[in-house]
Image 1 (tube, one colour):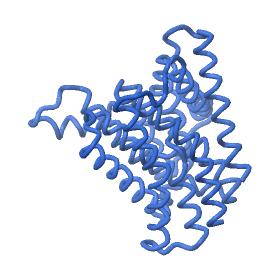
Image 2 (image 1 turned 180 degrees about the vertical axis):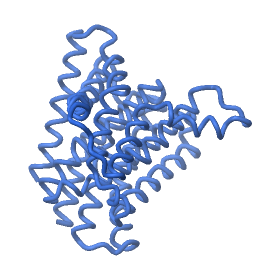
Image 3 (image 1 turned 45 degrees about the vertical axis):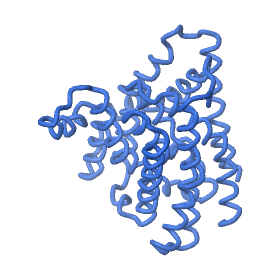
Image 4 (image 1 turned 90 degrees about the vertical axis):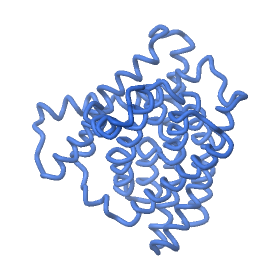
Length: 310
């Protein structure tokens, strides 16, 4: 169980550092936006390329991955249903809320969780690949289309199709997948700078998130609070239950795979969601509050799941 607590402690310290920097005005008023932009355009693409280039793409076809994909889609669909009936958000805010309901923190918490609780850090790699190669491109394409104001019925299809070609995160992910798929080697003169740049991605995202907490009131009254509470409930409670039902009864996985599926589904919302929202300036409060609530509540969920199923 110490792996779960260690993962959350690491995140908490870096987020707190970002909050302190904002409170002390280190970096000036534009530090948060600068970190977000550098992470989005430089550090995250470098990280994704190196991770995916070393990954086994055949892992994407595994049954546990199908459990995670199905649970994420169902969780997002449930949020959109609540949005249609009760929340009535804008299209871009609904997209952010739906993604926050199913996009898990597979890196910062998922990796130590898989290593120290499940005993196999590679268990989480397929989820990382799913999110980077499928969920992230879909999310960014939707946000791009919803915020550009340039989509007409005649050009909608072409506009949506060309968005991935202009996004550094998607381009880096696809490039890494090509390298992995063909078994190509990356020269050290190219790889090592990317490794160094990619190492800055997670700290930048976490610090930018911590900066966003300064001067704000998480879960303040209004539609964003209800939307964030809905997204957090779907992510933290409904998605792990969906993963259990799918793993146990739909895919009939063994006990170890069921535990892994539930623990991965119980991870909090990833900081990437806030980074995407901040990039397009849509649903930032919703993303931030959902991440905060799920990060604070998921340790109890993960510990309970591990105790019951472990």
